[in-house]
Image 1 (tube, rainbow, N blue to C red):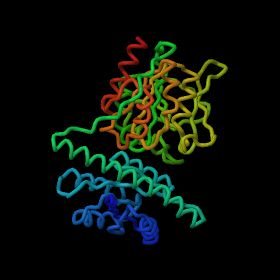
Image 2: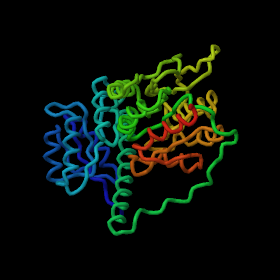
Image 3: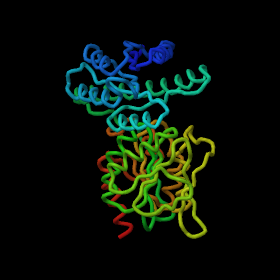
Image 4: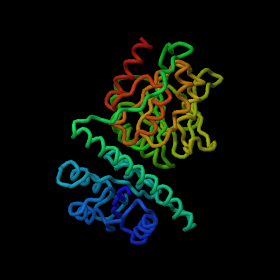
Length: 371
């Protein structure tokens, strides 16, 4: 029998703590080891009895989620805990809540769950259950993989061999002749990955960048604002009809698809739609990538970064046969290697790189193609 994931619940609302506890009590793979009302109490608990993961409320008195997250990072880095502690943020659907959530994700929180705000209590509980359990379980799986890799390295056995991958796909139309746009698809772990990569990438290339980050409404606006403070060029939540040009980053709005269309005036424009989800996602990486393939053909670079699931994989072969250059983030630097791993498995990926290597690699391709 696999070990249960030990969870500490941190929220200033007793009602909400009870709701989370009741959800976790129904599962066979989670164990609630504590329930406290603020960050100060959480840190006291963690020092004495570190859980596997903390569900951390974003907005709390005395010590909010960001400050608590930073202290947890310090404890993890200190080596004083018997094990590393992960964090899933629980965020209210407010502008302030979204901003604090993004800051916490950039600081290293594993992921976040949006607190339901509807009038139907039953539907609220079901939505919370669905989001929370998936993310705790994915964290548990990732944690087990990391521990096994560490055990093998410590024993001198090295990492487990990667599975055999399909043969590499070769561009059927020849490589693209230029790079007119850079595409990025990302999910779990995205805010931190983007905050590491985008500032450097924008120093290196002067090409428009289109980003799909899986997030609900409001959170992508906060993400864009946070990244804009770190980047030398504008970072914007995309709006319908905007021209894709210049040294700008356009982020798909939360809960909506972003596609690219060729205008009658010859300009490429962004279109924002409410079409059904693809791969269970809206915005969807595949939706953007397929539309960009239609507009730009092989004249682009696409990067698949850390994320849960397989969104983006269905567009890989089409991009590659058009001549696009495709990069996937490697497993060691990904929070979850679902999306990059699925892309690599298609045989269409040109390079598998650490998050630190991706910006220089994109610059190399742009310089080679654009002269």
